[in-house]
Each structure stands twice: as C-alpha cells, then as structure tokens.
Length: 398
Image (tube, rainbow, N blue to C red):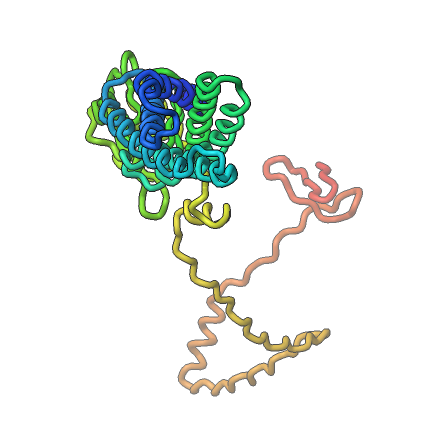
C-alpha cells in the first residue's frame, strides 16, 4: 500500500487493538481487584501494549495482502508489547491513589510509563528485523506517540463521566497516537524506498530500512509478488542490499528470467535515484533521499565515474624568428660573366680540313616572301596549288 494508507492503518490498528486489549483486561481483572492495585494496572497496560504491538505487526501483513510469513513477527511483537506494557505500567503507577498524592508527580510518572510502552512497541519490530535504523525510527515515533497519547488519556479519563467510558476513549486515543507516530517516523525518516509501478498491485511502497530487502514470491520477501505478478518471478528473485557507504545495490539471485535495471539485464548493479527495476511483469521504481552525503555536489561526485585526470598540456615557447633582410628595389645584380676561354690556334695540318667541311655545308636559302596584302601591305602566305595568298593579319585571301 502507499505511505498514506500505511500511516492510516498504523493509527487505526493501534487504536482499535488498544481498545481490544483494554476490554480484555476489564473483563478479566477489574471486577476482581480494587482499581488501585499496582499489579492489576501493570497487567492492564501489558495487555494493552501487547495488543498495540500486535496491531503494528499486522500492518505489514495487511499491506502485502497475506498473513503467511508474518506469524513469527506477530508473536514476537505481542511478547515485546506485553513486556514493555508491564514495565511502563509498573513505572507509571509507582504513585497511586490517596488524597495526599502529588498530582504533578502522578501525571509525570504516568507520561513516562506510557512513553516507555511506546518506545518498546516502536522498537520491537526493528529488533525482529535486526535493523538499527528501524529501531531508531520506531523508538522516536513510539516515544512521541506515548507522550501525546498519555496526555490525552489523562485529560479524557478525568473529564469524562464514568471510569469505563473515559478509560475506553483514552486507550483508543493512546493506541492511535502510538501507531500514528510510529508510522510517521518510519516514513519521514526513511532514506530509500521502492514503489511498484506495474504488475501486482501498483502503488505499493516499502521502506528500505533493513540491511537486505528480498523481492520475489517467497514468504520471506519484504515486497512479495503473487497472482499474475508471480509469472516469471522466482521465490527469492533478487536482493537489494545496503552497502557500507550508504548506497544500495541490486543483486540477481540467479533467476531464469533475469533482473533488469533501466531495460538492461544485470547481475549486480549499484542503484541510483529513479532507477526502474523489472522482474517478470513487475516494474519497481527505486527512490532515495541523499542523506548519507554532506551535499548534493558530493552526491554527484560520488555517483559519477571517477575518470583519470588528464595530463597538463605544455605549450612550447615560440622560438625567435630572425629578422628578414631588407628588400632592395632595383635591377638584380648581374653576375660577372666568365671571361671567354681563349681558343688556341688550329694546327696548320688541320686548317685545310676545317675549311673544306665549312664549304661542304649547303647554305640555307631564305624563306620566300609572298605577295604583300593590299590592305596592310604585309607579306601573305602562298596557298599551294591555287596561286593565291592568305594574309594572316587581315584574314584576307587575295
């Protein structure tokens, strides 16, 4: 069930079970002993405490829709409530009866006695679950409920005409206050919780206040799935465990259908706020209050993967650039030409051969010049076989 219904059922069952415990004590004891008997009052408060403790234990069975698996818890809470009620009733009624009774001391001891009853009822369920956080939350809620409920009990029991109606109304309000504030403390002081979004009975919520929370079809599961929600779900399908640094990790128990976190199949994964856990047709949302870290910035750093620090980039110092030579405008300097090599005179026996070779070379005749163009007077190019010329400048055939 949702947290609002959980708080409502804590208050309702606390009140009505207190009334049932008082009724049993009235029928069994008050007609046999005088009202000022300390032992009788201690037994009455023990029966009322046992009834309230049993009612608080039944809230879990009512939330999950079945009593199987909660019988041992019910018996343990009944015994713890009985012991706490007997102790509180004995301390709260050390000063009883008589005309010379200090009323302030009487009320003070009565309030302390019912606060003891409330703390015992609130912490007994955490002792059964072996959870220090649940014990702490239950003790705080039970003490506040016992304080306010006992003050209401004193006012109503003394202002309502008749002893039995006043005590009946007072015990109902007292039990409702103890149950209400135990439920409120468990919800307000929670650090992480699960909410069923799809599958069997959507809207159910469970506080992760025990070291290991089991999800599956088993009787030991804190969040069981039955009926159509049990398709593909193992008896112990997965566990959600609190780690040493305060974070929570989901661990698959070797199930055949597997466990999925945000659509990916995992065997072991550290959960983050808002992760969706799927087992079979059921989808459970993980929520977390980041109270185990100092600030939101530290939480982000804790969740973010730690990457190795990058090596610092070294910027090389620029080398000095030499100044460019001045540009000289003017004609480029001419390189001194090598002096012509002196030619040695030919020997006398080679002179006639050289002169003969030069005379043997035919002289190249100059290219014939065509008829001048009548327009530009430049010589044209003769066109073979036609006797005409073509002026390349004027593109004129003449």
